[in-house]
Every structure is written in C-alpha cells, then in structure tokens.
Length: 400
DNA sequence: CTAGGGTTAG
Image (tube, rainbow, N blue to C red):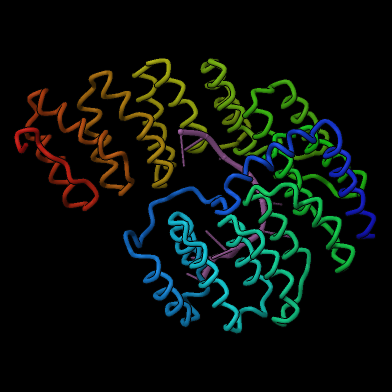
C-alpha cells in the first residue's frame, strides 16, 4: 500500500517538475545555490538570551548543560543555541552540539532524534539531517513516518525543494513507511514555498484519491500561498473545497485573507471580515489586528490605528513579545510622524514594561520629540526606564 | 510538568 501511495505522490512531483513548474522549481533551487557553501538558516533572527557570547564558549557551555536530563527535555534550549550559532555562521558548532547528543540515552527515543533532525533543517543543514536519519538504526532508534516527515520538513526549511522528490522515491517503499496527512501537508508546503501553488492543489487531489482526507492545515497552507500572491479568486476556490471537505476554518484561515484585502487597499472589507469572523465564533488574534493596523497606518488614519491597537490590548493578544515588536514597529514611526507625542510616549512605556524590543532609534526619536514638545519630565522618565530595562541607552538631547 | 513531524506579518 505504502508503495502505491508514495509512488503516486512521487509521480505528481515528477510530472509537475517536468512540466510547467520546472523553471520555478529550478529557480527555487538555484536561489539557494549561491549560498550553497553556507547553509541557509530558516530560523529568523530573534533576540537570543545569550548574546555576545563567543561561539566556542557557547558550544562548550551547551554540551555541559545537556548532561542534565532536565535541560535536554526542553527543546527551546536547543533552538536558541542553534539559532544563535546559525546566525554567526558557525555550522561546525551546530554539528558539534547536535552530534554530541548521540551519547545520551535519549537517542533511542524517536521523538528526540526527530527534534535533532528538524534542528539541522532549521539551520539549513539538510545533509546532516539525512545522515542522522540514516544512522538511526545504529543508534538503536526505530524509524516511523514521524522521522521521515521530519526529514521532509528539513528539506522545506532548508529550501532544498528538489530533494523532496528524491526522498519520496527512495525511502518510504524501502523502509515500509506509509505516508500520512502530515507527509502530504509537508509536500503541499514545499510546493507553495517553491512558488507552485498549482502543484500544491494537485497534491490535495491526489491525497483524496489515495483515501486521505485533507485537513485544516492543508487548506490553511494553500490560503497563505494564494493570498500572498493576491490570487483572491483562486483562494475562493480553496474556500469551496474546504467547505465541501467539511473543514471548519480557524483564525489562520482568515488571516492571510485579511492581509490580502489590506494589501489590495480594501481595508473596510478587511474590517467587515473581522466582524464576520466574530459572528462565526472565530476570535481575531494579534495577526488579524496587526493586518488592520498596517492598513490604517498606510492610509494615515491615526484614529483607527489607535482604536485597533486598543483592541489588541482588550483581546489580550498583545502579550506576545514578538507580536508586540511587529505592532510597535508599525505604529511608533507613524504616530511620531503624526505628532501624537503622548500616544508615542505611552507606546514606548508599554514596550519597555512588556520587554518587547523596538528599534532603539524609534524610541530615541520619541525622547527627542518629547523634549521638543517641552515635555522634559516625560523625556527623562523614558530615558530612565530605558536604562533600567538595560535594553535602551537613550539620551536627552542636552546630554550631547 | 504542560510541546515542538505539518499552516501566518516584518
């Protein structure tokens, strides 16, 4: 059975690769070529906890820390280290710390190895991911569709889309692995990222023929791809498919549409869509509201931008640091441009209180504007708060 | 302890 399933899926991959999508897939492949010597890190640069530590020290410290079982159980620890090393281009350090993990008993646990495979993928180190997958039997660790899926996903994260067809051809049949919905969804994601949403649609067809039912994630992946390309009528067809599949949309189905409407300068329709979501019991989140804020900032509608920022706080979806950083980086320069110093001051205080990092130059601008606006006390307060937070070395203009 | 094989903006 498994051979039939993946044989068909592989055929879709092959056909689409040899037809219209060839150039696109090739292009997607060549895009990553120039960086071939240095793997592409798929993890966005986020503020890390251990900043400015030199890579050798980090590797050494990390290996010592992983002697503790408690430390090993927290995937976030691994992600932070790998992200930081990848950002520094220290791929041998990543290899060092991940290979080191083989000495722990955890390697017999497939879930643990899956985590390591996906870390290699996030660091853009697909060859290492593949090698680890191949070594699993020697490590006394059983392989199921779960580790195969981790490997597929590593292709997507390292943008090596052309490897997916090879893996589908080579592995499932040989290892008697039956593909599941996650496998198909990963292939859908690969086609979407490789700029071939048409092929991704073909995968949906194939999975239905193979007796697997597409799920929410299958459709949401397609929504994102079509709306990103402003292909609203294609996306409408996906809504119909979803409906006939009996799948109920969630907030992540609506968010790409909100962004597309805003990008198409249809902000009032986006607002209506938010209302529709609420009617249907789908609660808008920070992504939904940020889409609107972005539109109102662009249209220079200060009142509406402020109102929706208030909605963020009300819905308690402004808690996330990263989310807040995005909101504030949208809003702060705009509010300064509009000369609403009091609101800018409030935003800065909230940013500091929530420890969500915003661009230091933007915050300095607020200090300067406060001074210009004869609000010296507020300016001083902000400088003091920035200093206390240890994140901002703000200066009063008179200090210079 | 709660999670990490698959889906969001910049």
